[in-house]
Amino acid sequence: MAIIGASLGALVSCSLSDSTQPEGDTSFIESNWGIEAPESAATVEYYSTDSDFQGGREDVYVISMEESDRSGYWNDSEYTLDSSEVARREISPQSISESSGAELDEVFFESLKCREPEERDQNYIVSCFNPTDGNFYVFEEIF
Image 1 (cartoon, one colour):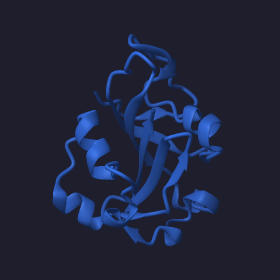
Image 2 (image 1 turned 45 degrees about the horizontal axis):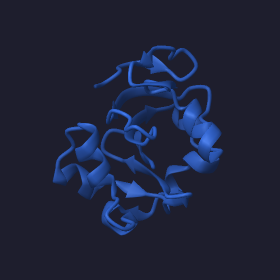
Image 3 (image 1 turned 30 degrees about the vertical axis):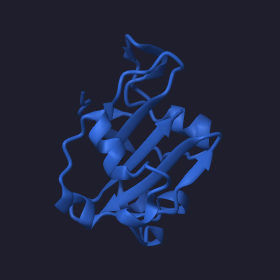
Image 4 (image 1 turned 90 degrees about the vertical axis):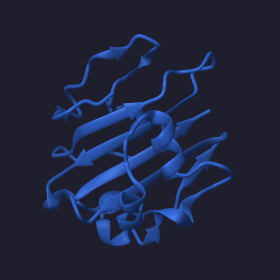
């Protein structure tokens, strides 16, 4: 499932399987992880698994933003780890991408630069930057 060109503030459609998570709305990331997106940020693609019976799921957010807004958490110069370096347990950007239905190939993952992942209560998030397309890719697993 993909959402194209959706503004972060304007996403209001809800998944039938999980009414607490509007599709592609990064305010969920803001509330769970304290990661605020700048005003120019827009979700250009979103992929997700269906929520399981406990609400668990895996999400991939593709976020674009103005270069002038890339500061703090979104400062792409701080994205220095290869995507292979951010795997935890069996969880990785590649595994989340596969589960969520995002069709990102191995060559794509080789170009990503990522931040150190965060884990809380068995939940996992890692943000990556793709210098090729200038977008941020946020991989999230909610347990």
